[in-house]
Amino acid sequence: MTGKTAFETQYGFARKDVRLETWRLAPFNRWSFQNVGELVPSAHVPGAPGGEEQAKSLGALLEENISFAGGSETVESFLKRSDTDGLTILKGGRLVGDWSALHMPFGSRHIIFSISKSVTAILAGILEGEGLFDPNASVTHYIPEAKGSAYGDASVRNVLDMTVSLDFEEAYLDPESAFARYRRSTLWNPGGGSESLTAFLQTLPRLAEPHGHTYRYRSPNSDMLGILLERACGMRVTQLLRDKLWLPLGAASDMSVTVDMEGTARTAGGMSMTPRDLARIGEMMRQGGRANGRPIVPETWVRDTVATGGSHEAWQRGTMAFLFPKGRYRNKWYQTGHDSGAFCCIGIHGQWLYVNPKKEVVIAKMSSQPEPVDDRLDVDLVGFFEALSTMV
Image (cartoon, rainbow, N blue to C red):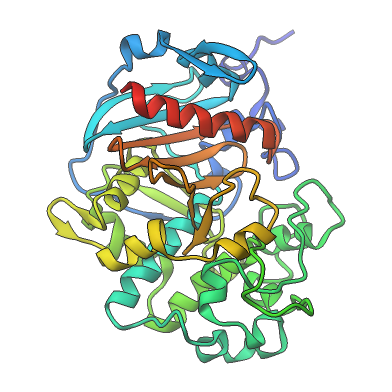
């Protein structure tokens, strides 16, 4: 009888058990969310030279109590209950501290899922500021072959704000759905490689409702945005990330993004990075698009994205109004409508970047929640972030 491998001792399961069929399931996601490149082809973007960092404990903050509707618990207890893998908090641009689960060494990259959408939108803002990208143009201005799809009469603005009238459901757990076919086209599910992501997007049907009327969370819109950006400027997404965002930001570590059979980046959900670097993105947005004393994205774009733009009416017609009753959605960022002016981006399985301008706080949280979506926990998370912002 052989003993357990070092991997099995650390994680409680064997590496061979983590496959395309299982990588988003608990408990395997505690490892796979930090090692997506072993499962899905990925392209890498280098960090700034000399960027090695050391962890800083949150200290006594972990023992502070936070109240919820059903009672109260300590910060550390909530982090564990919400399956947190890594957390970084900034206050006024300074590091408050980090927290890591035992299975996520400090400095590890972690997939951010749909926060990738928000990062991609930053690239759109940069290119718009350079006069290379027009959010008011039609999708077919950049991608003529999209004419026969739901995007045939949609604008880039519809794509940015998730108001494309797209006949598609985010059926995360249905293996026979169009969503499963979508994931096969991205090589995230078994059986991929016969249909590219670009080809899949051009088959999506349209609803009868006019574009722009209703906020509909549809991930293909954000993959379409990545392709739009490449067509607009003639650069690959990974090159845009490196030259326009990652190096100017001063990111300390490499990042990566999954790619399909043609090398098309999964800009809707395939990016991985460290909590520290994700927090840097939030701080850049809090600072009106500036980092390291230089502008990265136009301040007017940031203000429109996090404070003034977007349709409250379209948001109210959508299915996420329960989370932010006074909210809006603009350029793939959520405006909470809170008095704090908080804004955020969210990914499935518990990925969050929460920015509270009033308190000058940025919180980056990466997680391995068992369920892709947990509405009740999301409500608690928003309360947690707001409370934590007042405690640091």
